[in-house]
Image (cartoon, rainbow, N blue to C red; front, top):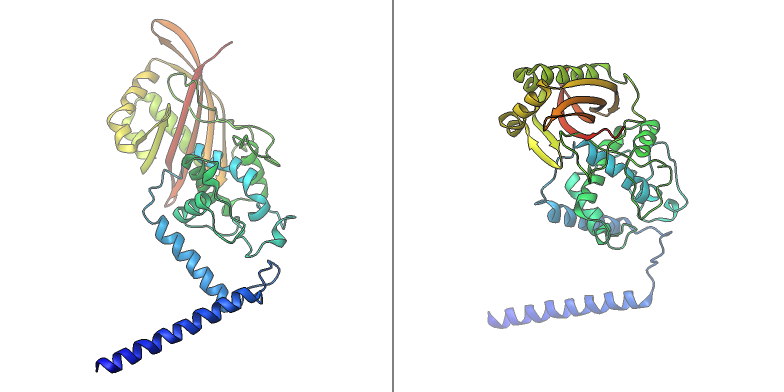
Length: 333
């Protein structure tokens, strides 16, 4: 018995030695064409594709995602995508680029597919060996990469004009050429000045693009100004995120704390709506507004310029507010 096991082990060792030697000889011979213009065999391609996909899935499974419905995050990601990604992954309405035809394997056209957000984050941050996908984590922080992921979730639903509009309003990637992004963007609203935040411009929002969503936004404003807590909460989705001054709260946290402060603040204020516009974003909508708020702070009259960006999501036949960005600052004139 022991003799047979020993003989079997020697046979296996001999076969493995031959296979390793053959593989080494094949690799050293240079017979395999490594050129990007010569496709892998079907077997090699399938093996590499499976290895790539499983590697990313396993490594990204435990990631914790931020709120990808955050309007400011989406806008920031639009600028990053325009600067970093269009030559390989294209944009809505773009048929090809000078670089893309020479890439193998071909990068996915991200305006036509929706990548799992955790996998997308991992791939953007770490890159993919033996492909044209760089590891952007070496030059961009996690928050910036998540902004690109948030934008990628919206991209497949955008028309070329919607893409152009949102990129024109996006904060640019200062280190790279934005291509068709000519204007820096702006973001949100809160009840005190926020010196280091970037205001979100409403330029490019098409008036009355989604009247039903705008109606919800106006109903939300009215409910806050009237102090109608029940009406305010009824318009918020269960998973709504409310962001003010760089701090994000859940719906429940807002209901138990800052909602009361907002109602009290607005009870002694005069709010004048200057503009309101909306834009479709696939299954969601963005509604932006600008207002002036006249009130008394520390016994002094003050006029604030207030900006708001709401992200709304369809809930059955109705719209619900999924995310709120607020920012305000004293008028200088």
